[in-house]
Length: 374
Image 1 (spheres, rainbow, N blue to C red):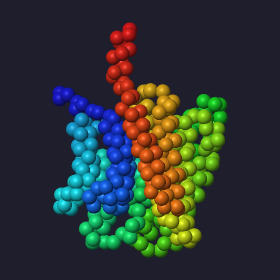
Image 2 (cartoon, rainbow, N blue to C red):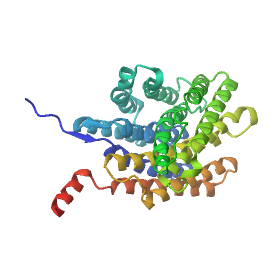
Image 3 (cartoon, rainbow, N blue to C red):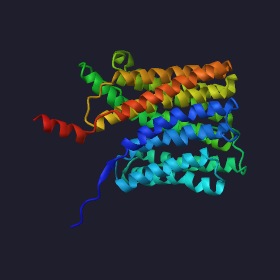
Image 4 (cartoon, rainbow, N blue to C red):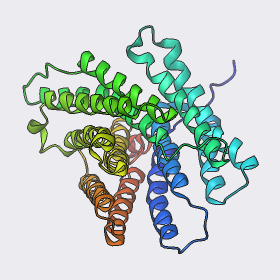
């Protein structure tokens, strides 16, 4: 009988890679903005790399739990290849197929199982969402090749925000309920399906408007529905009772930024708010905080460590939250000083996140240490 193929935990590869790349990508974009690098790192590429690069690496580490070593290596190398292809400015004939490799693999490994195993629409929504990143990748390349003008519409970012809205709406109340239970408190309102349905419907309308460029008022109404859904759900999770537990409070802070980002996006057309304010609250605040928090939390869980945040993790989240405030301020009051300060906070927060992830002891190592002590 052939031996079982060895497996590896993909989060050990994808999480540190995502944090380190996020720490590098923003200073690179800032250097390009200051004219310190050759032309090539356009705003479209910057947005692409923070969503379909950094964010999808985090999604992969979370969803692709245990793969064979060959598949795990293929996931990391295909993701890394996509990043290098854009960084090096390879011709589209080479960059395009390399760029599609990782989203295709992610959908095959993580998206299709949701479609096959989810008998109700409750979880089946994740399959189409993950598959939609292929559409976002296609829209990026058609725009880069000049085939279809997108007008700077952040389709990939809104997809990530929709994924955070739905997946966060499952993970955060479960973590919150456990923390409250240890205080002797029962959380009555967890998934809140009606509010969840309202949020998903609103996000879908906003995505449809962004992808087609049609009916901006409908997109604004959808973003308002998504933002209201997030904030109403958060209020029912009793966040004020867990302010002293940073591993839970960080999740609540990220979801707060998510709701605020959707509402700022909703206010862009009717109230004349800068569209980039909402986009950066979603991308820097919600994505940055939730991604770093979830990477650290799931690493602690999967390595069978106590879920209590180490001090460095709390500082990392605080730095990313500061980066979000500074970046949104720089949208409203353009300033190179604010941009630089935001980039410094972001980079330091991501480097600290990577340091926490890379210094966690492996379960096998702890077993060895325990046997030696015995």
